[in-house]
Amino acid sequence: MLYNTVYHSSKRGFKSFENIRISSNLLIVLTCAYVALVLNEPFLLKTVSVITKSDDYNLLFLLSVPLFLLSLFVLINSVMAIGFLLKPVLITTVLISSTIFYAIFNYGTVFDYTMVQNAIETDTTEALSYLNIDSIGFLILFGVLPSLLIYWAPIRQLSIGQNILTRLRLIGVTLLLIVAIAGCFYVNYAAVGRNNSNLITYITPYKLLDSAVKFTKRSYFSPHRDFQLLDNDPSISQSAGSAKLTVLVLGETARAQNFSLNGYAIATNQYTQDKGVMSFSKVGSCGTATAVSVPCMFSRLDRHSYDKQKADSQQNVLDIIQLAGTDVLWIDNNNGSCKGVCARVKSIELSPDLNSQFCDGEYCFDEALLGPLADKLDDLTHNNTLIVLHMMGSHGPTYFRRFPQDKRPFTPDCQRSDIQNCTQQELINTYDNTIAYTDFVLSKVIEKLTELEQIKDIETSMLYISDHGESLGEKGVYLHGLPYAFAPSEQTHVPMIYWQGSEMLDKNPGCIKSVTEQPISHDNLFDTLLGMTSVNSSTYDASMDVLAQCPSAGVLANTELENSQIEIL
Image (tube, rainbow, N blue to C red):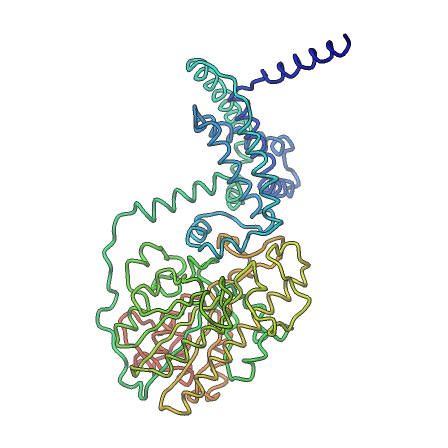
């Protein structure tokens, strides 16, 4: 009898539990509370830090921030998550938010317009490099499991009229809260927002969605632009003399402060330090990600006026150099990511499946660039040649895969992709190994050019410059891609190294030293390349050619400028 009583009572209890239903509005509020108060922890912590730094901050204003954020999220989802879209919208919001939360929490990544562009243009191999046990476990815990709870949540079925009425009530309540909070603390919110505009970039996931919409609109729905010729009649200077070969090595994710040529205490440049190179110690990047920096540095536009659509619809410096009669070749070991710069010149893309000791099926070490370079040096068809080598360089987070094991001078290092779980010294050692390996490859390029000069009557030169820098945990920030306005110098201060063959030989060491210590940027590359390749062009600005100040360190594009007083900006 007792068993039957307990059994039937339990059965009725289970049936009662099965009959429990929640309203769609409650599901929205619970989901938004999770996203706003948990997955937006980086935003809330940074906001609290900003507010509490003021000696006379308002405690009620501080407490209003999470409520204001929650109210905004509820309002947005109340409008979007309607009818059959309820669970898909909420699940999508949670999955996207948890991914952003992981990136911000572990790397300090901010998903602004530039980061969206960089993410969309990233290939599968690069994207998969961020997957590891740590990231997968994090996303399951904060993204997949909450999404499953939303999916399984039983929703109380109401009539269409009831659904509309209850949803309007929810919208009304949240609007009242937003208006009340804004009315009471408008001055406080305005002051914090005006003085800390970067805070909005941490709001998850709506800053990402806003950036994605802007990127889509500008990339796919902008008016068509006719291609513009900036110079339709460039030429090679008659005073250039013998044949000329210029090699531009485009680095990846290298930061200037880790180059011993710039005073770094660790010997990361032991291969080039005795090669007679010039290291420019104060170079600023155009952006903090490849998607911006690479097209910007080859464009006539400067960092402040750079616009992707405008840059894509006009000649870049490679186009002008090629039109002048120079043989231009782009050799890429960066997953084919020339970002449109090499679209109109000959190019070679190294495949990771290449049957080479330097390739493993996913990546190639940068030594793989030396093979195609040697082939081109054996088959020079023009008196003027420009070769661009695009390196994989120091691309993270898998720094340990950027160098062979026999080129690993600094240990212990970080042999994993979840770099935030390595010690600071291990991470720095791994990154320094990538710089040392880049230096080794540069020394091999110099040796090949030196050999070429010895057997042929040809002037050779090499310029190395990185696209952007990298954060290695300083102030909790990793990798790169922060908005330029508040990006740390680790992401914007890049190395630039120049080498010239027998023509330089320290003919004017005082001038050369003064040039290398002047502040310059990616904006100078356009004119410096024109000068190095002896190309006369109406687009050339001698004041921006960093080598024009010292005639022994490069040939001016226009000999009439040799006697002029040139000032480097």
